[in-house]
Length: 80
Image (cartoon, rainbow, N blue to C red; front, side, top):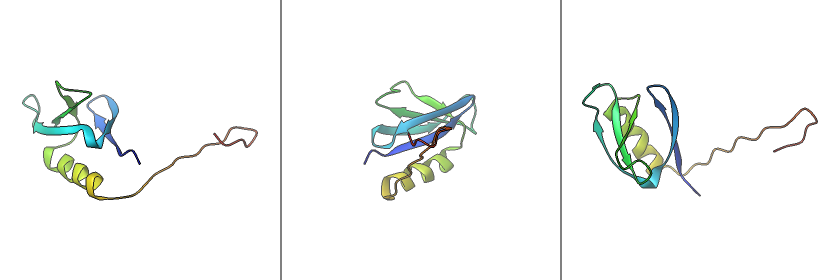
């Protein structure tokens, strides 16, 4: 299973591969935001949550084994 985490950005959202998160710091430009460092974003990506809230989310994703699958269907009822 590939563990993904959805986070809100100051403008928009991002999906992060949980296993590739290397660390996080409180953003120096806004203490209510957190800068997250990953393999994909080595210079950091600023998310719209405090570091303690992000820590809880990150830890839950690392230790929780659950899967969310969203399935949609079109107007003819075909699942895709």
